[in-house]
Image (cartoon, rainbow, N blue to C red; front, side):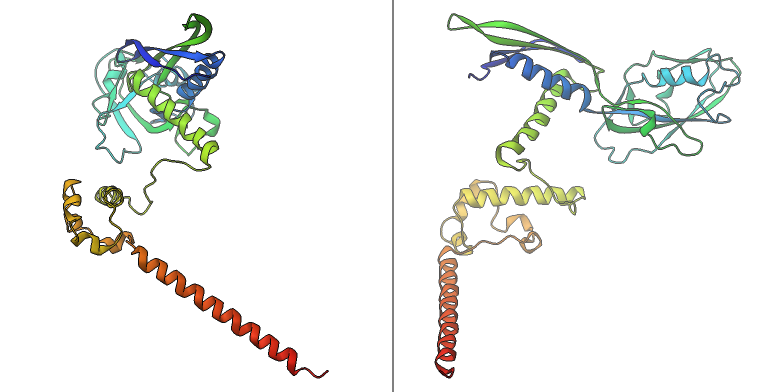
Length: 333
C-alpha cells in the first residue's frame, strides 16, 4: 500500500480545473474518484431560487398577461440562474427580493435582476428569462437561500401565495473521472486518477476539491478515533467579537502549554518572557479568564489534595469496618 506522492494541476481557471493524483494502489483510483465525485456533486453549498411570487398568479400552470412564456417555462429559466455572494459581510441575507420589470424591452435576461438583488452577483447575466410586450409591467418576488445539493419541490414548504420550485444549490456543473495505469519502479500495477471539475464560477475547482476532501476526512476521522477533530465554537459565542475572544483564548491555552506554564507563580519566574515571545502580554490581552473558566493547576498541590482524599477514604473505610466488628461481637451467642 502506497500513498499518493503528488497532486498535479493540469489545468485551472475560474470554472474549470483538471487534477492528476498519482501514484495510487490498484483500485484506489476508482475508490477515491467515486467518493470525491459523489461529495462534489451533492454536498457542496450554494445559493439558488427556491420560490417565486407574481402578482395575480396562483399556480405554476398560469399564463401572464403580456408575457409570451407561461409560468412553467419561466421557472425552468429561473432555475438556471447562478448566484455568488458578493462579500462575506452579508451575515443576514434578505428572505426575498422584489423586482419590478418596467423596462420597455422585449427580452428580460438574468442581468436585469441585478439592480434589485444587490448582495448577489449573477454569474450568467445573458440567460433569457422571458419575452414580454413593451408596455407590460411585472412585479416578481424571488426567494433566494443557501443550501446543499438538490432539493425537489415536494420537500419545499408551500405557503399561500408562494410557488415553490425544484432547487439546485450545488455549484458543481460536472465532474469527470479518468483512471489510468501508472509506473512505479518499473512496475505498472498502480493507478493514476485524473479529475476534471466544472463549476458555475461561484467557487474555483481547486477550492471545491479541497472542500470535498475536507468533508470526507471529517467523516473518516469518526471511524479512526470516534470523535471529530475540528474545533467547535460554543453556540453562546454567536457574536463576532465573542468568537474572536474565544479563538484568542484557544491560542492562549496552547501557548501556556508550549511554554510549560502550569501555575500562576510560573508567570513570575522568568517564564514571562516566553509569553511575550509567543505574542501574548502579561495581562492576557485584558481578557477576563473567569468568563472562560480556565484553570491552571499546581501539580504538587493536586498530588497533595489527591493523597489527602485517599487518606480520608481509607480512614472512613476503617471506621466502618470497626463498627461492623463491634456489632458482631455485641450480638448474643
